[in-house]
Image (cartoon, rainbow, N blue to C red):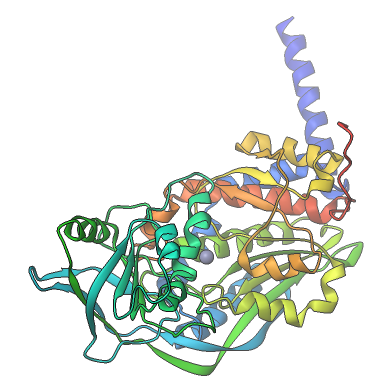
Length: 469
Ligand SMILES: [Zn+2]
């Protein structure tokens, strides 16, 4: 009996191998091929090697600097090594913002240095700094409620805390404090603005990030306080009036050059239909941009390499775009403007820009939630520990938001972001924070999903049906 079982098992195994191999070569939209790609990605460390290369050889790479040129050249080289075709760099102009000195101290009844970092885009203080009384608000709403003129001559400080959450929702909810806070404070008369870092750690490393000045308000210098320093200010403010001195000396260089680096795996049947995957090459200058967004760069480049190596290219063209100035919001608008007319041919877009942890769910456009495509994707992702979310994608990375506005459907691969904002935009965003196994899993999920998106006969623009099924 056992001999017969062994014989049957070996015939079954043979059958599986032959059908499996045939599926890999011939069958399109194959869940088995997708699952196989995910397994392959999880067994190698190519994405980690890419992040390691970018964050080590280039290091920090602020848009508009010499490091950005090195990043562009690195990307062109690595795309070629991955077997990607049509590689090119699309130039655009930007105003480079360069960090200068940044110090803050409490002056008066006690003298204490504070850990601060300028927000990207901030104007400078006079070289000798600004010294003024502090107006402290524990929530952003309290700042907004302050009457016009009430902050005249003061330094406004908002110490609202960002909430830690797996999906990063706390960052989105608090974003206006950094982006809009400086102008809101200026409208009320403030001469400078400080916020508690948009970060979930308790280290004395402040988190930078861009601000957006409102044209209707004076431009005032703005910086982020490290979390413990915001705590300190809250305690001191409870004891009475307090003065603070702030020195920020950033500079700007207009008409600097940036690039979006792109390449393709031409489609085998529908080369004019494009599945676009991206990540951003630029980083803030404080760390080495390992998790933001070296990890995303590693994920999409490693996924493209695995797909390029398949015996047959997916039916649609897979395009990889490495955006050159996400942090200061230049690369997305530049790409959207340059590819405006092409938008109807972009079947789906997705950007990897949420760190290096595992992908636990994939959000797809509403119209395909109940499709055969979604069923196959779920089947392929399950062994690697990810599922198709029942909630549709509402957005992907910032660089594809402009395409989304033009009607391009987006997918969102959700990574565990519980600790992403501990080091995000700080000097601590370095390679040692990345777990190669988690990054390999994320790469696997991207590879499997993107292969299916490019090879399946699925219309991501389909309108969702309202019936239960
Ligand atoms: Zn990013």
